[in-house]
Image 1 (tube, rainbow, N blue to C red):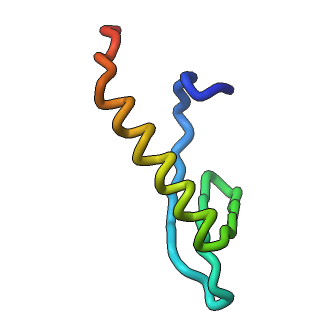
Image 2 (tube, rainbow, N blue to C red):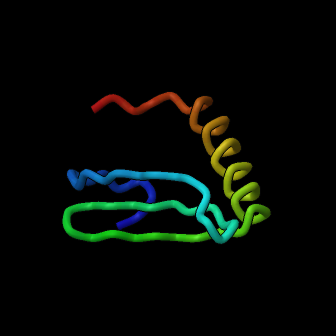
Length: 65
């Protein structure tokens, strides 16, 4: 599966700080749980990448189905 492939899988994303000073992305889908911990600096870089992707996506006109 690639970035442009659609899926019917539903997932839940939670984001928050841990008691160890990390930023956790916690993803659940079906019976699978994926906790991903990042340093605050790494989390800032990820946030910048998300903002840049959102700005790029806003410029794209969706293809009609």
